[in-house]
Image (cartoon, rainbow, N blue to C red; front, side, top):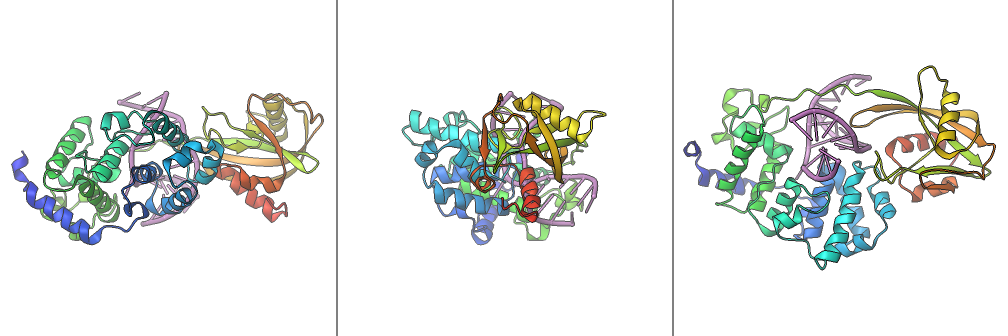
Length: 359
DNA sequence: GATTCGTGGAC
DNA sequence: TGTCCAAGAAT
């Protein structure tokens, strides 16, 4: 089976291509395990160009792992705000705490120790340890799975085929730097061997790739069909008490955990917007409110559902009585910039700004 | 093993 | 406008 590939020659082509064409990325300027780790966490399901400004901002404020361990989670989330998948940030914070307390601040170099860290799976453990220490672990991300499924002409990415692909990359790693091989394959995947466009003429693997000979390399692997996502109609209220309004912090365990929001929730069948809003606010924080003017309406798409959120100004009849299961704060509009809010709220803030609220 | 996690780019 | 999907992990 493996004799059909000239492993040594292919590895040489791969490394040569990488030395000439590798992307100049901020996290490739250093082999600090903390920085490589951070980059891999941020890059999870997130494109390079999106990550770069967040990566720089983060390192500017938190240059070392110890700085993260000593930071407050809310301040870290503020840096992360807008990047999505907020558990990545909170897990990374937890992991840095563990490294400081249990490993004297040194990131584990052992695969099985490292993968125990919160937010570290097989991919990130392999990527960090191969890049930092040149350990021979294939980092099977979406790019590499696609490149290899085409190279080996595998229609499906079954567990068996993933193992075959893993073992094949291990053979390459006997002839070249594992870190460079992983990163070379990632660059090929993101720049050349794209999901819907395989530019095979640019690819250092072209001579040996089995999918390019089919004239339809893009049909590997077979794309999966996505389920349609539901939409929810949501109402929220800005409850004013003179120059301040109420915000709630979302529960750790829930969607968007740790971020702040306005009180409100999903509308029920047959309910008017103000009825739903009055009911939700009463349930969430025990306040009885009068619903005043409509501020605006935004749409936002999450991974597995979308919302149509309408927001109203509200006035409480009993501001001093608060019983919430969540942390809450009364803040002035200017303080919004100090706290992390989800993207949907920022769409609302831009409406408020147009109305002269200076948030 | 299938779902649940955000957001924005590309087309 | 809609659709896919990106340097995946946790449950």
